[in-house]
Image (tube, rainbow, N blue to C red; front, top):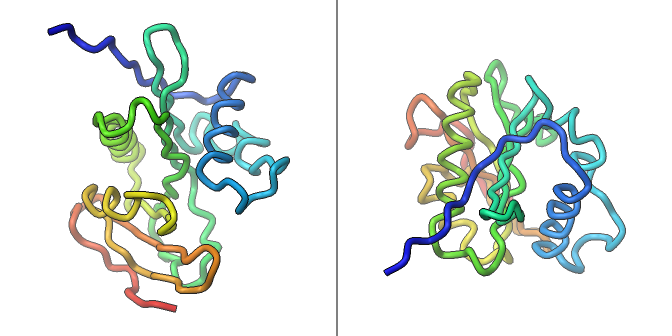
Length: 181
């Protein structure tokens, strides 16, 4: 039985065109017609402001030839949801989890999250926040398996956003609100 080729994880503080292309393609694959075809998300337009040294963290998984296979990131949480303000806490927003289809169901997403979690702890983050959507297959179950809890479940179409969080001092605890709207 042959061993799978090694996949490396790399932390990026600047992004080249290939990396930005991969991140943009993954965004469009995940959200399809729900996003404008030519839109470039703000964090990709201003990569260093979101993921540069001392700001956030973006991890890229690469195959032995250097081709991107997956990504995950966190950036400072902007507290744009008033009911999820987390006053006085150092909170980051987990974003950009994506694994290319041929690598799915092989543990790469868990490996990416474990590495991101370790970096968040080194950066003295107190809470991880993220949101996801029911149209992303397996997303809610994956994040619940990683110790997150749903704190708000929106019912408005088309997004039906699920807001989740995880405190880092106790992986199973969340002091955030629990509500549907």
